[in-house]
Length: 188
Figure: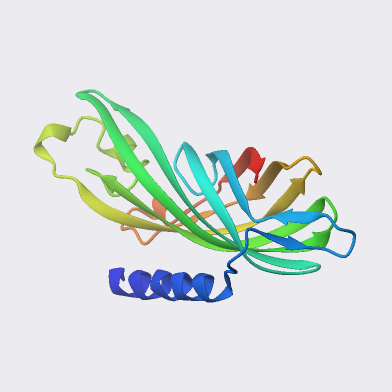
């Protein structure tokens, strides 16, 4: 499973670099420019709680664009013995369809996280576990995305999406979790 994920994201990286262009903006017929980069804060979404993300447009041909993103998130799980800090790195490839300011967004991502437990809800089942006796391990989540994207003329960005979490777990409740994400940031 880890090998498949590594091949998947290596392929995405190669595709994104092949589509990238050397200039930072693409001129449009009406002399305006498309901002290719974005920095935004996302609540929930691909990360467990909150994440800071950098996004880059890797292809644009109106009304279709492709974006790749990387972020850093952290979650804190409260247990009897103390808090468990769970850092995560959400990665995603997203395609948008639309014109002007309003876009539909479809994507697929994976989130790598470092934890002493396989999934956050596992803490509910192992609430009395001594977390100091466990070692940190790397885990992966698959996170598809379908949502709405708004880009203002001044570069402000708002995203709202349905982002279910798909996870291969022995705990049935962890295999699929309904999740939503909201992002706000700035394009540059």
